[in-house]
Image (cartoon, one colour):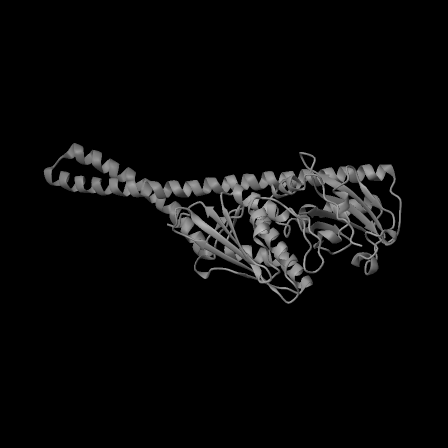
Amino acid sequence: MTTQLPIPKNELERLMALSDFDLDYSNIHNNFKDLSKLAAKVAGADISMVNLIDSFTQWTVSNYGLPLDQMPREDSVCQYTIVEQDSFEVIDLSADDRFKDKFYVTGQPELRYYFGIPLRVDGGHHIGALCVLDTQTRVLTPEKVELLKIIADEIINRLKALKVIENLRSRVDEVSENQRRVAHDIRGPLGGIIGLAQIISEQGNENQMDEVLEFVNLIHRSGRSILELADEILSADKAAKQEAPQLGSNEFNQLVLKEKLLKLYAPQALNKKVDFTVSTSSENQVVPFSKNKLLQIIGNLVSNALKFTPQGGKVAVHLMLELGTPDNLLQIKVEDSGIGMDPEQIDQILNGKGESTTGTGGEQGYGFGLALVKHLIDSLKGTLAIESEQGKGTLFTIRLPQSKILTK
């Protein structure tokens, strides 16, 4: 008999609350490693983890005692914690029908005890859990439970701090970009003024117009000084770009995004025995674009594609940046050789509706991943197109407008 998976109330809103942090799950471990270690010491347990749970995956953003980065959401214990108000405890995982056959119970490290506290953000949504685990059963005193709750609160505080820091970095990047734009914008008019002043100066010299010459020469020198400053700003920026592509804190380029996607989702593909590839367009693969919500959008589509592609199948992501359009356009295609969808299913997705279905490997769904994708794309003023044929796979095409990038 299939166990009914727990789904929090307002699951779509919960996923949106998690996506608001716009996290890169692959590089925030160091921000929480002291807290995960402290949680294990407080509980007297072998293992502790900080887990964030999205539509398909439990991401372990910090761990102590168990080197684990991710697992399918349907295999996790923390999925039960996030539907609880206060905490979730399992005294003996091997005696619980929901967990007794899981790989971490039947195989190494042969876990037995679990205690989890939901990570609650503003609005009351639980985006993940702080949990402690052990290979032996145990009992946590009320004092230890309270300390673990304090640690859970500190995890949320740090997530909020990370969000604020990223916003500040983006503003600093924006100021630097504005400085470069100002230098670029003043250079043209100044060049014209200096040229005109040069002509008047030459004519005035022929006519011996001493007062006019003195005034024009002053304009000429002042304009030249400002123009040289503008050139200095632009030259420094150009030199920095020639040394190495410099990305702002809120930017990716195609190469960086490709590396992130392979790091995050290649393990899932390997586990499912599906060929997973990411390709870029070579002519502008180092040009920066906004990274806002990209990992959440593409990640949900890739996880969904892996879910509905059988062993031996293929999932491919194609990245392309179109320059020179009214808005530079980032195009993302996620293509799979899976079971495909019928027109009714496509219509549901394009209308932002979620429906749970079962994957080719028996994976159970939660029904909100693609609805979240549509919401995020709409929030970025992008478009989503879906082409699919049952039994022959699906192609998702996303187009996201990007602000113009100054290249001169």
